[in-house]
Length: 106
Image (tube, rainbow, N blue to C red; front, top):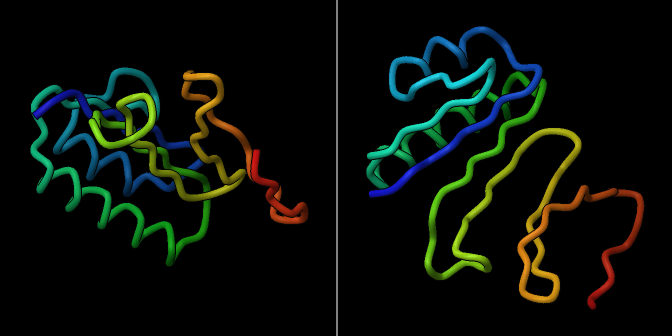
């Protein structure tokens, strides 16, 4: 178990109520938990991403340690603008994905 951070932007109040019951709100829309199990993290992500699929408003970004992922961090994101994690010269960066442009391999 390690630090998990979930960031919300421009979402409905229901997210705040739910996330505040499971994680500490560090700043408006920024939630963290130092001891969240993988099972609890997956359940929380399942709930908030399902809400986002139905409500379709704002964005959510989840960040947590993952030894298998580039840079040792897993990043999940839903909403607009779509962001994705990329590795560039050994550094983990995030980039916006423009759905109108084709994605080119490096």
